[in-house]
Length: 336
Image 1: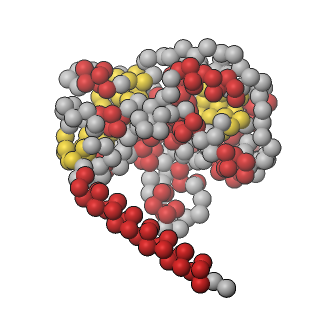
Image 2: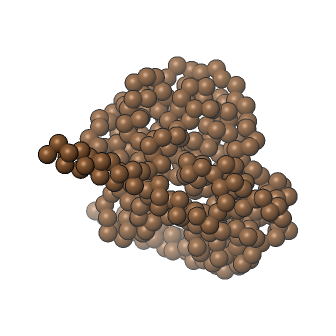
Image 3: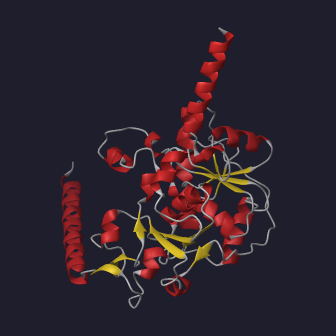
């Protein structure tokens, strides 16, 4: 009987190893790690908007509002000046010299972008909780609605250029055989059918693996929109073996430049790839917003934005809004 129990235990352990996830060690961590780290004094950073944070967050977590809006230029969608970011993080007590764990919703690319932010501005002990608040609640762990105020920090941020790459350097690497490009946008963005800059298309030679393919259910966003599912559980990461298979055609020894529209979705895939052992992974910070607007940069599947048609659609929308407002005003006047 004892031998049988031992055998079953070994089989169970083997099965667990077979389903090992990248959230067991390294920069991508799970709920148990977050709970332990918070107890030993790690900073927990909730990157969601203030309203979501106020509705319930991990106890002790700090919030600066929607991090992607607060720390980035709204037009270029790149980082604000380093001294501005420094002031914001210091005021919130987010000291990058300490361990900082970032989270949002399950699979939230802004949480992964938060880790990119930590690394880019010199943090050496950043982590991301991919499961986020949804996973935390599903595990029955406590949430708080009380805001956390940390002591003001006094750090000086030092940019780490190896973390990000910009258009000028991307152009210089297009013909480098030791560099590979990965486009994590949707298939329609990659093909040029979905234009989100002055032109559509993709960087020559770039592979296309949408960032959602890292998830257990890559179709989750559509299912949520169509109300086929009610939770974000499907945004949990695939197993380590599945993720390795997903990126099997890429060389882990080459420099890998990952891009999307503005570096957010790219951050999620970049973090996954580093966890899988890819040596040199950089996020193209300007991504297609920068590349697509650089009209002399070579591209494949190039399409251009039809400005006239866009203006026509905007005009129709404005007319519809004006008509609705007129009806609303008329209804107000007719009301007793």
